Length: 261
Image (tube, rainbow, N blue to C red; front, side):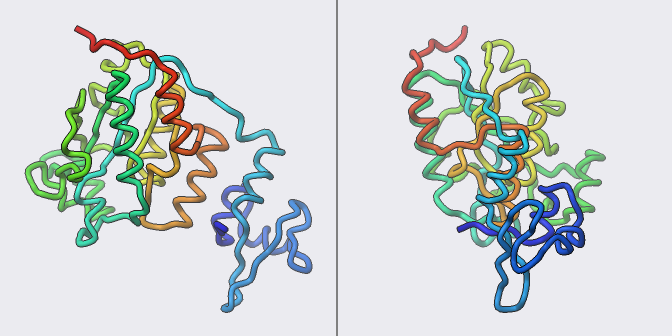
């Protein structure tokens, strides 16, 4: 059972934590019908599935659905984000294997695959600015070992490998030109972090007219609660968060495409 803390639940409901607390009576948030769970230390927790159901009742969490021309876009499954010795590592719970299975399936169907990796470039103003806010990013020198693709994914040939200093995969990159040339209408998004680049890229992709599909087993973050609450919000407003097996089934329905000349 996935739980949210009071700040996460309040943010998703569009109210302040203090307002959410005042709505509580006898272990229930009366207006929303949410059950309150108390930790041994007296902290409040809320059941993620109940908040999800509330979103659906309020007109959120519709379906974008799969299109006819997908791309698999992988962000930052590099050593920096997957090696336990790195300052930037996420909680690894099978994301690499789930992504590898999708890569293999995509290759079998001729579906284009893009790998985007975050780098730090001290000569660029944005890198300096972001690095001052997030100092751990400074380990991501373009030529260092940390920006190498995870070994389980490095064995594949990608249609494009994009190194970027930016949070959003589209910003100042050749990504949209690549997608337009191939008539892409659906972006299957894997990688990390859920609350950072995955969220930013998903929102931007929707704004540019793409169907965004996020297989939940193939994304990750450093905080499980932040990961879960971000997926809830993405599914409510910007993307379809689905099981990885749905993506694999979808890929199998497609005719094999020939690589563009």
